[in-house]
Amino acid sequence: MQTWRSVDVSKAEWRWVIIISGLLVALSLVPYAWALASNESDDGTQFMGMLSNPQDGATYLSKIEQGRRGSWLFELRYTPEEHDGAGFHTFYILLGHVARMTGLSNLLVFHLARVASSLFMFISFYQLGATVWVRLRPRRLFFTLISVGSGLGWFLLLLDPNAISADMNIPEAFPFYAAYSNPHFPTCIACLALAASVYLVVFRRGYTDQPSIENGGLTIMLLSIVLALVQPTALLPVGGALVLYVLARWYITREFPAHELRWASMLWLPALPFAVYDVFVFRFNDIMASFNKQNQTLSPPLYLYLFGYGLLLLVAIPGLVRAIRRFERDGDQLMLLWFVVNVIGLYLPFNLQRRLTMGLIIPLVYFDVRALEDYWFYRVPRDWRAPAMIALIVFIVPTNVLVLGIPLVGAVASTESGLETGMLLESDYWDAFEWLNDTGEKDQVVLASRNVSLWVPAYTDQVVVYGHIYETVPNEEREDQMEAWYHGEDCETLLSDDLPFRVRYIFWGPQEQDMSEDDDGNTYPNTGQCFEEIPDDRIEQEVIKGDVTLYVLD
Image (cartoon, rainbow, N blue to C red; front, side):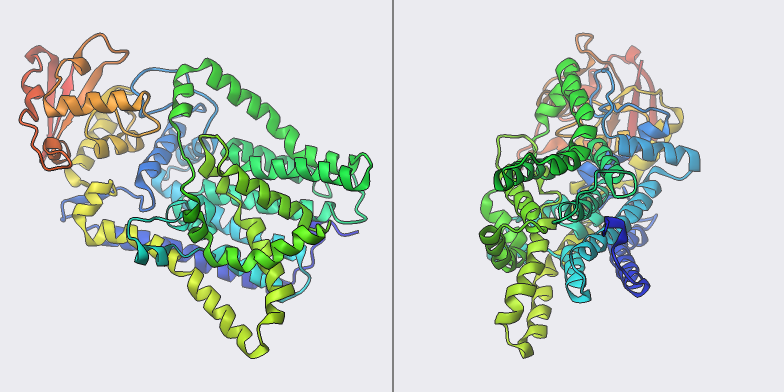
């Protein structure tokens, strides 16, 4: 009897997969190589190491920094108030310990992990495709479509430059975009693909073996633990699909689905303690509870998802219709339930709706290949099949080019844009960071503008008053206090003894001076006045790094 490990894949197939996977990963590195090569030491700016979503990228580095300094519990380094840590973001904390043991920089460890996890993801895709299909053509179709598949976001931009579809700003939903963004997205997508490859075997007709070490039972448990540690929300769609699958088997057979229940439990049970722990943390840790409440990643309007999945969704329709009509056990049942649960979950009253897109492309591309093999290849004349497939690839690739290129243009071609988005900082800030890292006191509070505060916890051992919309608690209050101080509207609050923290370092440089105007061009007349109102006996030292001054308070 076949197990998920006994899938027949030739050495030539794996060689092809590894070469293509390596090329895709190398392609995701090109923009970074270009950005680093273009960031000349004498141009007055410093590339901070993140092209895709630098706001979140900086927080990843801050978590790695925590592990580098020996911590195993996650703290909100963008929150100045002291608080208890929690067992979250273990993936990046672990990378920090790797950085400490190897002596490599946090940024290098981040990108090495991104390369390794992306290769793992692409190889997992072929394992899943080989589990489903015996012939080479559907295997390679599945691998190609899921690896580089994207939507029509590029076309929507032509129609409306302000409309950003899912394939343009939700990297966890599209594997190639995920590989470009960070290491934890591809890690989780790979785990979902491997879990699916196990379940599609053990749920086949005639398979009756109980879960064990040899047949994938232990693998499912380990994958569940990894997902629970790295991205717990990724378990919800596939876990919910398994619930419905067990119920469906009971309804269809009118027998207790002991086999299905045992295998589904391999995913549910290992994740349960982590879920209980999360509930307790959010119940008894006030800061973490506030952080969770602020962490709003809601789904965009439905049409942005439709454009985001684009032709992949259209091509899959015959496969989805066939699966609904026949509801066959061999693969279609579980994948259909996964797809349906996933789509419904995107709009449930839940603050992390968008995170549920992770893995949705797996059942979608499964039905793409089903539809191509069972419907479209019979409808399209033989002479037109190859051109039609080329056209499909051509239409689903452009968004990938844009998500690679747009941040690069912002960081390299336009210094002003790079400074505005936080991809770049003036070089003098980098020199100040090095002083803070070498001389500054651990865990002291830093006051700086948004973009500067974004990178302080990533490259130093200090925390900031305000730096991130989700990881600063309470974010609106701290942001208002920071802005009011630099605008000269409230010079007392942040330096008073009434707050649960004490500001130790204050930045004054080009980024802070740029806060003198609002979005409408109106000037704040008192910008910088608060520096004059700091009592002389509180200024312990002024550290000057070019155009940046770092005030050290007692």
